[in-house]
Image (cartoon, rainbow, N blue to C red; front, side):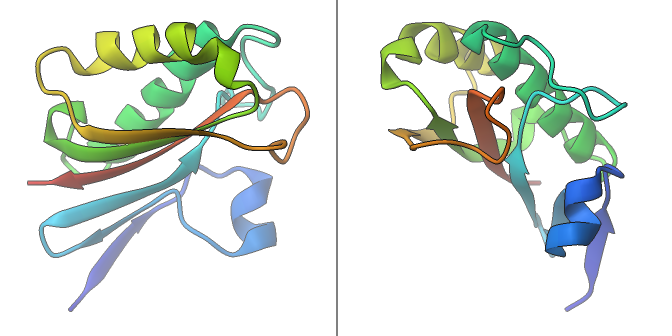
Length: 127
């Protein structure tokens, strides 16, 4: 089976050795995605809602590069540094998906790769 890969161009991809997203057949797997701008800077420092919105925008961009969209997402995983922020994070997630609600999991982690990052989102899409 052939794989189609998308890169966001961030330093992390070459350092760690991964792709932003990979299409394998009718599935697209989007790697853990954070609230980073095109220049690599963290967006929404201190604001879990803004970071979730940006992370999901970055997920959407990766999907679009593989001719898919958030409407095709069937599964998300949200890794958060403070579970008490669940309402703000959940609100951003709900707004992004509307009635096309994917299966999801939200778990608290001790920290992410950059201390300014509050949220990381993984996604699986099918088309």
